[in-house]
Length: 51
Length: 451
Image 1 (cartoon, rainbow over the protein chains, first blue to last red):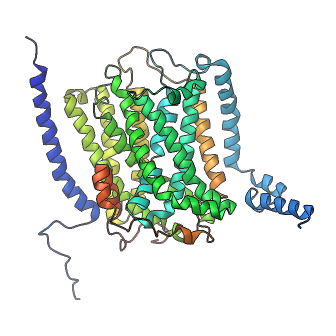
Image 2 (image 1 turned 180 degrees about the horizontal axis):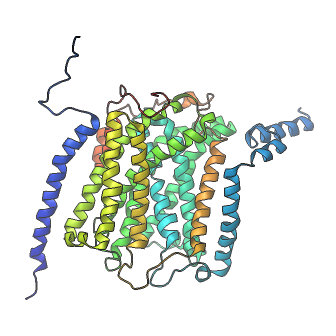
Image 3 (image 1 turned 45 degrees about the horizontal axis):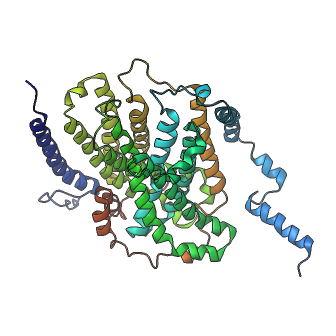
């Protein structure tokens, strides 16, 4: 039997879309990390302790 | 009426001031006796006769090229690498003149000079590689508009002309030609638009050249997206070259630097952010290439290991080095990331055009010593030309007589061009967005200032 290359393309497309989604999610975190931003909801800078 | 003797004297003093850098002939010749110049003479003493030999005896006498391997080191290194490392010119011109990021203006001129010299040498390398170099004019005569090579030829011709015009700006300042300078200043925005258009076209078209060789190029490097890879990696290479070149030239030409040029450290951190973002995107694009061809199994072969060295070791790792350095204000990390990126992009171009090309043939191409000598000679000529010009013309310093004309008045206001950039250049516009990020209060570590 010959493989149907046309239909097999879809398997590759799924992986490509998954990769794109993973990239976008990671990119948001990477962008924030590079810019030195804190994640939303994380605590702000602690006040300095008094001695 | 001026006396002829006085005219001669002024001519002589002009030559002494502009060419001999204020020295008399004997002192100037004595100043040339440096270890660097001796190395240059040694390289040129070997390389120039080899170039003459190539043009008199032909390709067969000087190279290991064949009908099976018509492209070798002169295309893979001189052309492909020379062009991609010159991408800093259009990247920073676009950031400054189109996206309104005028704080990066001090690095525009060195970038344009590097690009101009890089393109001239790439064109010379191409002429050396052509069996019948005089036939290069055929690209003008015959309209092969369906060919990627035709697009490359035209865009390189056009962009080299644009670079020449952009380079003439400091040259006119050096010559004191105010009127010509004013005229050229008015066309800078148009020239920048042209430079971005031509660069975008031919950086990607250089990748498109390999679309016709799916059977020759290893599947891990071949992809229908290869032209996108070439364009995005060109931006990464351009940004990295700006950092490397800035670090080197500010050490070598310290005595020539004045004004805003001295704040290079802070600009390099901004470039580091851009480098991190572009390389991160490029890494995932390369993975898309593997996914599209369903070549995951090939990653576990010897070629796969080499591919991973390229995209992890020289793309992902420098991306994080850039990011860490930019986030924490550590200039050493940014510079290390830049050097690794430059090496990685050179490796990529050599992989595509030489190492992974004809990968399945028993006899693989290895360049002859004469091919290596010619490439080394061209790089040396580029370094010498940059040094000669930067020592004389206002490349790293500003001529105060012309500084007022350079102020951004008719250009776009900062930030207003960013949305245009996002729409027009897609992923490439991430560069100005990243570079524009707040960094003014970041302490810079690893520099004389912080120590």
